[in-house]
Image 1 (cartoon, rainbow, N blue to C red):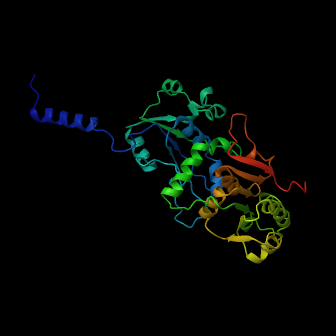
Image 2: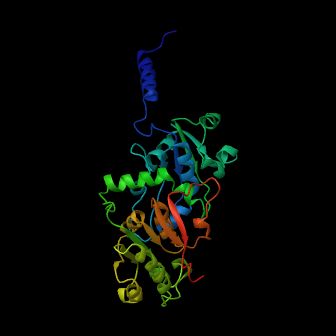
Image 3: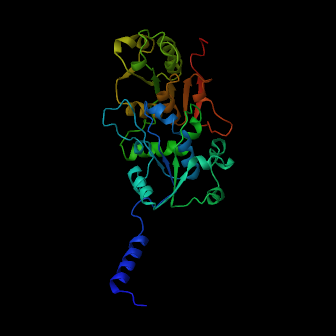
Length: 322
């Protein structure tokens, strides 16, 4: 049968185009979190913990958005600032590949039905056999479409790998300066600003306790470390917090500053003191070999049996007043 030459040429062209490798997203599998939920950066994490734990358990890049609603518009995606994301892939690319049907997209809700992908199990990692069972390979994108608020699971989410990645990217990419080994830092986070009650001795519950009570607790650690630098982190006017410096004279104010600088300071501190604000909780879980003074009974600081808590020593806030 005669086949016109132009038709043979067309078939060859189609074959070349179809077999051409992708230029991006070739280092899968990837976990793609589709959530667009926006709050403060601490609360934003709470709606993405299951996907973050899934990505970590699979040792897969996490693709998604981490936007702080308190940032000025246009609000940036802070995924890379936390050491997340991928250099070869992003959401726009994944959207194009999904539209072109050039990658295998798998709904995470199907995986969660498998006991191996239960959040309780994922903190210990996922075996390669479980990935093979579901056909997960370098060409797979796992879409996370269902999202739930998780105030717990902080130890599993911000585990040693997450902290190491965060600290590395801060120092080497964003030029943050680590705490000098010769210095002892105490960070005190007092949630005020948007939760202002007009009485620092009766603040919103997220602050932990009243200002003077927190100051007395801070002073106990200063007495044990007389040369400590004490950073008071909050939003508000300095005169509102002067009672704190009366009790802790060495206080250095960190008021109304960058949330990124505040988070880095807390993560570098030897002692972090604060309440149950999601922002303070994030900073406390990013520190290494530190003491965290807070409300121990809250789920944000309550570990499950398979969560590792060795990186910080948890102490009760205002233990002398309770």
